[in-house]
Amino acid sequence: MAVHYVCTGGCGGSVTQEEYNDGKTTCGDEDCEKYGQPFERKD
Ligand SMILES: [Zn+2]
Image 1 (cartoon, rainbow, N blue to C red):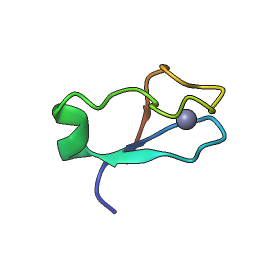
Image 2 (cartoon, rainbow, N blue to C red):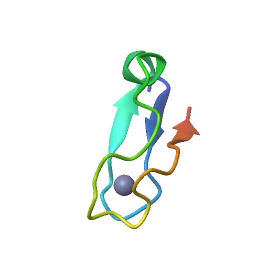
Image 3 (spheres, protein in one colour):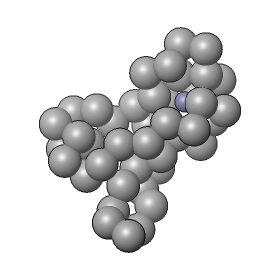
Image 4 (tube, helix red, strand yellow):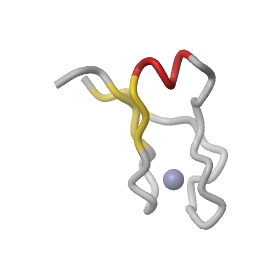
């Protein structure tokens, strides 16, 4: 599986490496307890 980045909160959000490089580095779900917190890398 390719490298991607995931939110560790309840939203279950994730982005690809490309999206992350584009600046999408934090959770964008306002209802998530991790909103605004950085995604965690998963290999
Ligand atoms: Zn989240």
